[in-house]
Length: 177
Image 1 (cartoon, rainbow, N blue to C red):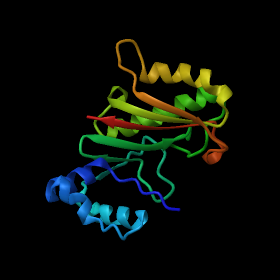
Image 2: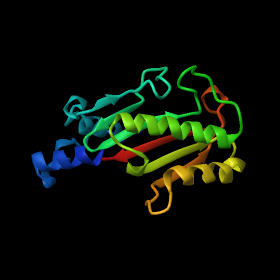
Image 3: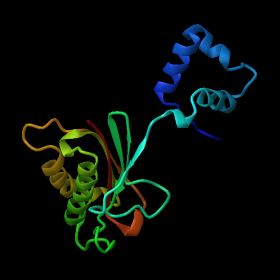
């Protein structure tokens, strides 16, 4: 089974271009849901979306086919950061406290390269290897992303079976500005 995520902008654009009533006529009822979604996605090729890679040497380099972050419009989507030292590329030793600190420092550097800072973050996702580390991670997280007078971002926190380099925490963010 395939699942396609269709951004609302695509659906909106299709309804504006073709009229809301005509939109579903664009998708033949004889198509199964996978074909219908594929046709919806084809209404606006990805090349029409402007996106720019954000990269800095002050954070660990991307070690695969992804960007440290991508700017699209007013939003910056930062890839998940684990506690890698940007100079040596090694996982920082220590507990979830030290690793959360390093991950958030890496995120700060990526956002700075994009001309933003941590107060621009609107959504985070935190991946924890062990949910028993939540309180310790949360204390560090609050210092960086929810200091006095700053509206904290929306957040999801999930426990995972494993993380790259056997890290204890990984954090990804979406920022606007």
